[in-house]
Length: 152
Image (tube, rainbow, N blue to C red; front, side):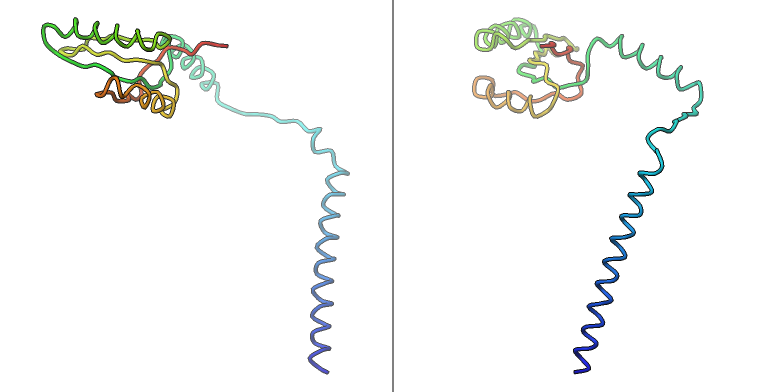
């Protein structure tokens, strides 16, 4: 019998705690409704050099003429006939994938041919899977400046 009384008292105590928590939550919401917090004023204090730095950053980004992205390298070779090979690979690629841009570069001693302008590595990886049958020595080049994407 005593165990039932203890159990009943514990249930009453837990019920009262839940009711008091619910009442506290209701009081908080009523207090928030009484005060108009959303009609306040926000004041930002910052150093004036932040504006100078932001202006410098914007000017340097405008000079870059691109953004960091990914391209796929499909050709890389040295030698006297490397340029001819590069042009041959380029024409072979353009015959199959006309809409994808090609970028030829020469960094001593290599002639290189990159394709595509991909913003994410996953986009580049998807296209790599498509072309790797025809161009088996391809790989993704990271952190290269790519052209701005077309706005559609």
